[in-house]
Every structure is written in structure tokens, then in C-alpha cells.
Amino acid sequence: MWVLGFYGVLALTGHGCPIRWGTGVPCPGCGLSRAGLALLRLDVPSAFTYHPMFWAVPLLGVFGWLYSRKPTRGLLWGISLLGVMFFVVYLVRLIARDPVLEIDIPSGLIFQAFGFFSKILRFS
Figure (tube, rainbow, N blue to C red):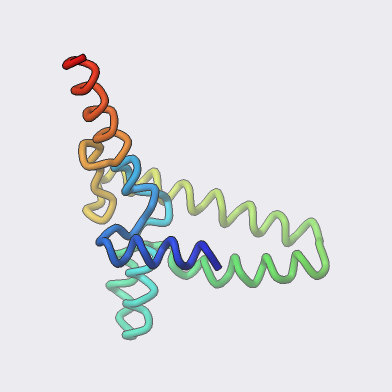
């Protein structure tokens, strides 16, 4: 429940992804929320634009539910395959400079904190 509260605070402050907010680097799931919202509007092309693997999230949920009930080697392989596909798509999107995955390290909280503390240490 606290996770939902944390994401709610991030959304209210204008930060969607805690990984991107902290590091300035998008996570492999970047664009999934926007893809889901596009799908709810029945805008499938936009959903694919935001994240090409949006369709895998419900599938992973079903696999996870089935795996928790009756673990089989096939379900484990299916989950693993989708995980690998998810990561490969992430790498391809980074290499292709997908605008949804814009990297902006100077805007990350960690980078800004280092800058802040380095200024303090210089003046000491």
C-alpha cells in the first residue's frame, strides 16, 4: 500500500518514475503507464510508440499467477523469455535513441546531490 502512496507523491510532484527521478536514466518499464492509458483509449499505435512490450505486462501477470498456483518448468521458461525480450527491447530503444527514453543525467537527484555537496565541500 505504501508503494501506491509513494508513486502518488511522485505523480503529484511531477515525477513519474523513481528511477528516472533519481538517476536521470529511464528504466526498462519507461512508457508502460502511458502505453496502458493509450490502450484504454483504444489507441494501439500510440501504445506501441510509448512501449512496444506493453502487451507483455498482463501476460506476465497471468504467468505469475499460474506459476504461484502450480509451478512448472514451462511457465518459468515463459516468464524468463518475456523478461529477456523486455530487456532486449529496452536496449534497442536506448541505442535507437527512442524519445520516450531520453537520458538526462544532470536532472537526476543523485547528480544534483553530488553537485550540491561538492559546492559545500569547496567552500569549507
